[in-house]
Length: 145
Ligand code: CA2
Image 1 (cartoon, helix red, strand yellow):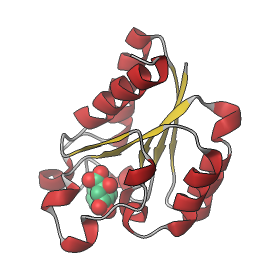
Image 2 (image 1 turned 120 degrees about the vertical axis):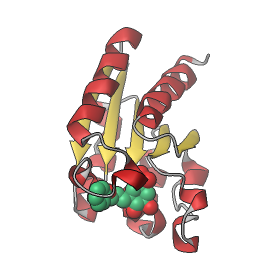
Image 3 (image 1 turned 180 degrees about the vertical axis):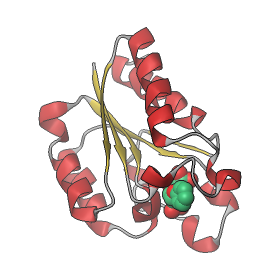
Image 4 (image 1 turned 90 degrees about the horizontal axis):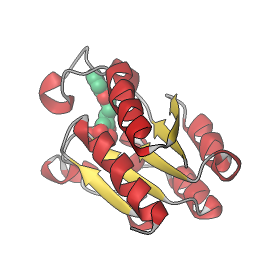
């Protein structure tokens, strides 16, 4: 099973600032945790981060050729991007939406996701562990467990 993990803007800054909101792990450390769990599950991971909306749209457009499912932390684009929503609608590749922080406990404008209703499910508020949970849940869903 091939799983693509897609990360949106500013997540490359993890571990350097705002640890109270997003934890102290870097994105590379989260990637290692996810790869470790993927190995246990027998899944193949491809890992991607971009600060550019169009690049995330293109990564989503490429999903049907490259992955059976995706774990997506769209970061701020979650709350703003109809273009990414349209790409997700177009490809119909199953995905789990993940957030480090609990977006429902934050400012009003972060409480709405433009992707969540298209997702298999959403994991929000569990920090880096949420990526591992998202992978496990997606893996089980794709297997039909
Ligand atoms: O909680 C999440 O995972 C978010 O997707 C993170 C986004 C935020 O816009 C979403 O509302 C929730 C922000 C990612 C920015 O990450 C930073 C990390 C360190 C320093 C500054 C930003």
